[in-house]
Structures are given as structure tokens and as C-alpha cells.
Image 1 (cartoon, each protein chain N blue to C red):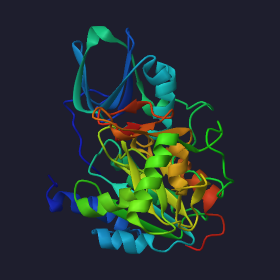
Image 2: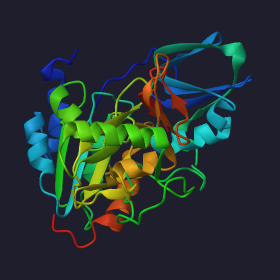
Image 3: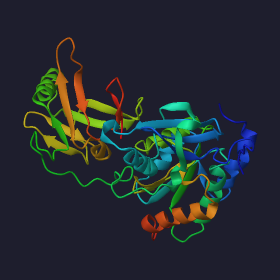
Image 4: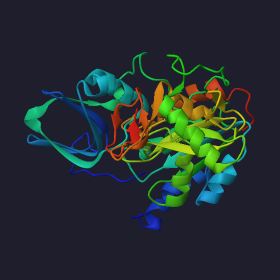
Amino acid sequence: MPYPEELVKPMRAELSSIGVKELKSGAEVDAFMAQKTGTAMVIVNSVCGCAAGGARPGVKLALNATNKPERVATVFAGQDLEAVAKARSYFADVPPSSPSIALFKDGELVHFVPRHMIEGRDPKTIAADLSKAFDSYCVGAKA
Amino acid sequence: MGTFHNDKSALHGITVVVDTNGPKVYVGRCDDEDTEKVILLDADVHEAGQNGKTKADYVNRAAKFGVWKKFDHIVIPRNEVASIKRLGEVEPVAEAKPTPAPKVEAPVGVPPPGNANAVVTLTAAAREEVKRLIQVEGKPGLGLRLGVKGGGCSGFTYKLEFDTKKEGDMVIDYGDCNVFLDRKSTIYLRGITLDHQKGLAGKGFVFHNPNATNTCGCGESFAV
């Protein structure tokens, strides 16, 4: 059952305030994923303080780097159910977990950070892991 | 910011590997632990030797991909627990399967039936049945599309349908019938044999998947 929207609002804002596009429906996810060229990142956000509490600032730090995905979007697990299910259909090979982060290049999943690689880690460590992936796949991308 | 649970143990919310003194090893999100028990949520369990995998093999794979949950909630008696470790601290070793959804090489040649390197092998019975069904469909150019999709009680579900070739497909030409595989499915189907069993006790099309670490009783779902 979704959490009260008032509780979730600041967790959404933590990402949307840095320019991450919120996708709230399956159609919005499809539209975002329809662009098959370049790099894109989808963050599965969550209310979980143990993991998402570090993931959001980790993403924020990582996106300060020079190499980063051209397009970044987020869906909210447990809240925007249709959007999350649709987003996961683009990385259906991977066991679902939230929070998690998927990086795509030219429409193909190239890097995935599951929940267990986020939980208990501080934002700097999460950012460092993401930056490593960005350096591999997002060099020269125009964000 | 987020939600916090100060009344729980330090491992609350952390995905852990719970090794036991016996053959079982569990992976799941720790809800709580005390001197009596460990409580895991969204958990999976593996038994040493299950599907030819040791406990270490299983944990190694979990460290790379995570696990498909089999239990919403599981309680492990503390006296069975040998160790608890964060899954995120397990370093996957080189033998692990490739990272999820890697790039598969461009469509390759046409492995002959029975070739050990064939991505997918159809038994003679399966080929006959596919041929027969395509004739019934009466549409030239149709072949058998095999694939996998997330879902089912063991994590993945097989796709089996008649279709025409699509861009990027790997094509296996059996002469009298073609098999199409999309790139993503190829990695999960490598080495698979598709059989067809007739008769009252027969199950129709049956998959034999050497990559599956676990299968469901229905035979339509598997885990890797």
C-alpha cells in the first residue's frame, strides 16, 4: 500500500530538484525509454531510509561529475506502481530491488546497481561506484 | 531522509547472507535478529549441491545479481546460523555468470542439431511438433520464437510462440524449421534443449535448462 504522499514528497523532491525527471505512469516510462540513442539512467527511488536515504544524495553527488548520463529519470517504488513495473520491464533480467539504479547506453542496459550495493553505504561511496560506471559508459555525453 | 527503525537490529534493512551449520544458505533482507532467531524478508534459500551449485557458487551469483525472492518472510533459528554477512560485502569471483543483460555478440552461425555448442537444441520430437504446428498455422516464414521474461514463481518464464524473424534475432536453422532468439534471451537459453512429450502423461513442450539453478514444479519458470 502506498505511503501518504506528504511523507514521500520530500524524497521525490530530493531528486526532482536536481533535474531528475519523475516518471509516474507506464506511458511516461515508455516515452522516456523510447529514445534509443545516448545514455540514460533510471533510478528506482524508495522510502527506505536504510538504502534510499544514501542513494539519493549519492546520485546527486555522482551527477556533479563531468561524465554522466545524458538523460536521468526516476520512478518511485511502492508509490507509482505502474511506472515502476514498466521501468522494471526494461531490466527484467535483474531481480527487482529498490532502491536500484539502471544505466542504459543506446537503449541497452549496461550497468545496474542493485539495492544490496547501496544499503549501508554512504553517499560518497555510492557516488564513487556510479562515477566509475559513468566513466566507462558516459564519456563525452552531453548531459 | 527516509524511514528509520530504531527498535530493530543494526542489520535491519540490509541484504545479508545467512550461512548455516547445515547445507542451507539464505539470502534476504534482514528484518531483525536476536539471540533466538534471524528474520529475513524477501528471501531465497539454497541447499549445497542443489542444481550442481555449491553454497559459494550460489552466494557468488547472488552478490552479482541479487536474488529472486521465494519467501516473503522466513525465520531462521539462531542455533542453525554459522555466520551473517552483508551481501554487498561479498566480492563476486570471476566464475560468476556475466553481468545482467550484457551485450550478446551479433547473431552467429547456424549450429547443427545436437552440436554441443548450439545455443538451443530441439530434439527430433520437438522439431516434428513445431513443423506440424507451423503447417497448421499455414503461414509461410513462421518459425519458433524462444525467449525468457521476468516473472513466474522461480524468477523467469519461458516464452514460446510462433513468429517471424525480427531484426537482431539469432536464427537457428534446422532445415525444416527455424528457431528465433532475441539477444537478451540468448544468454539464459544457451545450452537449453527443447523436447516434446506426447501421450497422456506427456507435458507437451519441455525445457531442459542446464543454466537453471532452480525450477518450478510447473516447468514454466526457472531461476539462474
